[in-house]
Image 1 (cartoon, one colour):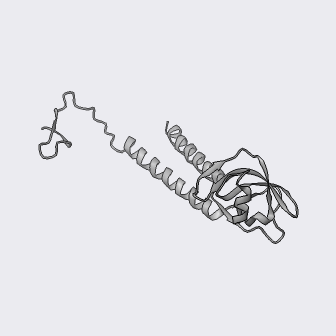
Image 2 (tube, helix red, strand yellow):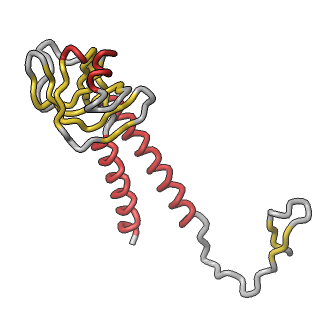
Image 3 (cartoon, rainbow, N blue to C red):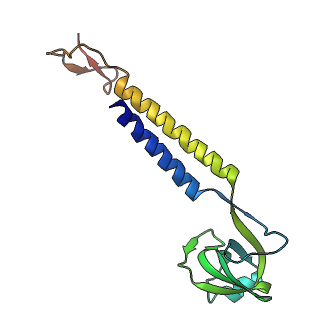
Length: 171
């Protein structure tokens, strides 16, 4: 019985840690000296002229285009778009349509990478939360057990006049 009770919270903690690891915490950094590699996820920030040029195909006021780089030439980036963020911070999810972005319309290219430090902190926080929950839940279940049966006729519960929401048992 005890093994069953402990295994459930352990599985829950493991599942939460796995979810935190898979979701992960990402950071964006400038690609290495070689340049952007195909198949990796990037964020493209357009110039002012790029915003105007992309307005018809992507939407006006585009601040950032995120997606997987699927093609690269001297003049364009071909991107399988996952989401677009406008200048107000509104996120529009895309379903992987491929869009050609002119290199002269892009001011900054940043690669999305998993941040080991941020992910570790997130997993640590989730683990501490789960451990605290399990510890308090097990205290609530097992912390006040006695071998004595409850009384057959417990005294009635009455409300206090000073604190009407607080209930006291009369003696």
